[in-house]
Length: 80
Image (cartoon, rainbow, N blue to C red; front, side, top):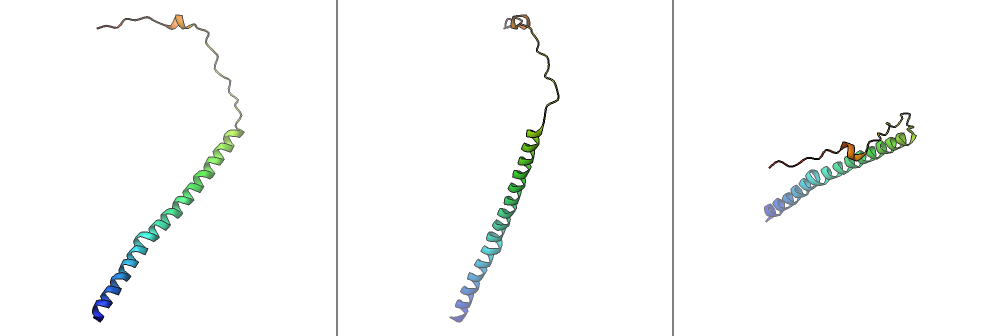
């Protein structure tokens, strides 16, 4: 009987060990890495947004072409 109790206790310890080291710790590490990556991405987005707000345009807009639509339109027939 002592052998079965010992075997059962060792089996329970093995299952707890596998649960902790192959499930809980990897999930904890993954969430920690994801949180740091999300924080880093958020900071980069803030920097880009601030840089975009401070940007002043020195280029001139392209000149507008004053052509009417009818001059550019070419009528065509569908060939069957």
